[in-house]
Structure formats: C-alpha cells, structure tokens
Length: 260
Image (cartoon, rainbow, N blue to C red; front, side, top):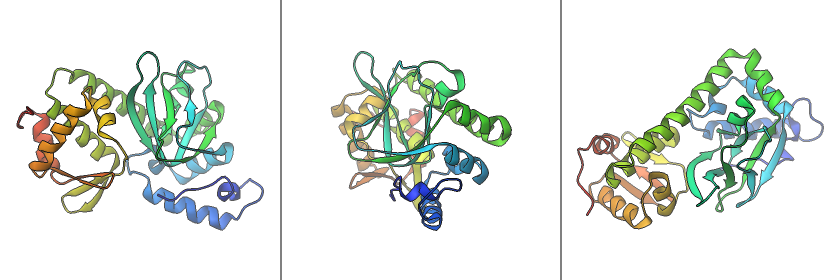
C-alpha cells in the first residue's frame, strides 16, 4: 500500500509548501485503494477536501496509540493508509475491530462528545498516515453536506450491527463464527481478484481472529484448516483469500461441518 507523508500532503490547497501535483497524484492513488464501503471512498471530493484542509497530517509508527480509552478528547482521525486495531483496554486487552485506509476512527466521540469507548493502536506490522481533525471541523462538514452525514451515520450503524451480531454468536460453533467473520471482512475489506475470489487486505494473525470471535488461537487454527480443506479459503503470505463466499455464508447458517 502506498504511504503518504506529511511533506507529501503539504500541497493541499490552502497549505504552504509542497508540490500540489504530487499530493493530488498520491491522494488519487490512495483513494483507488480504499475499500468501496469506507467513508472516505464514499464521500464527495468536496467533503473530503474540506476535512483535509481543516486537519493536520500525522504519521504514526507501528505500536503507537492514536486514541486512549476513557479520555475526553473528541478529535477524529481520517485514515489515509495503513492499519489500526481497536482494543478494549480496560481489564484484559481484547481486539474489537480493525480499521484501514479509508476508514474513520474517533467519530463516535465527536458525534456525542462522550469519552473514548476504546483504544486505537497502529498495527505493529504497519505504519499509518492520518489526518487529525477537530470535532468542530468534522461536524461543520456534516452540517452542510447531508450526503456525507448519512454516509458517516451508516458507517457507525454498520459497526454497531457487527458488534451486536458477534455478541449474539457467542454460543455458536467456532467454525460458524470464523466463517461469519470472514464473510464480514470480505464485505468490508475484500478486493475482487478473480470472478469468484476475494482477497482480504488485512494483516490479521490467527490469535487476533480468535479475539474477534471469542475463541482460542488453537480453535481458530483447526477451523481455518477445515475451511482450507473444503476449498473455501486459502492463505497467500499474510493475506486471506476467499474462494467460495457462498460456501462460507452457508456455514454461518449452520450448514457446515463441525470442528473436532
């Protein structure tokens, strides 16, 4: 994935320094890589440009923290590249979600002015570039751009639906929970690489997948082996390739084999 640095982004209209043509070219390439369902890929160029002009560009290295659970700050981060992990830091640390370039983090606190509900940390195998935006500047664009407001609302609603669905599957077999996770990730972050194949552009370990579905790493390993043996998925390097989305969906309905 292409990285944008603070210097590269200095050419945003209204900012001093930098080469605007370089900035526009790099931003255009990044937009092409953002998942189609991500907020930044869906909002208009005018809305995105307004946010970028109002915000400040920052680069974070692997392991750095963007947001701390419980704090009262309300800024929003527009993720331009890289991968972050959303973690419940109180008590035993648990991975709640993963976000990549094109996504927003921190928008819930900006919308309701409440404390941060989770911690957001850069993946240790990644670095990110983000635009940090004050709450007032974020909301100003939503106030005047009804389409952008609906896109952000739909994004927040989708996150809540996903969280609710995962809680409801606590008693479901691990194989079905893993299949549900892969189906969800395919819809959010999958890239079509063949007529019936999707590559999930996330760097998740099996331990992290286990945290997302409430299972141990060993259980995920066994379930993933079953999915591979049935030709539903394959692993290419650090990327998961979905070969049969319909088959995975059938497993989520209980039509699959059990993991022993």
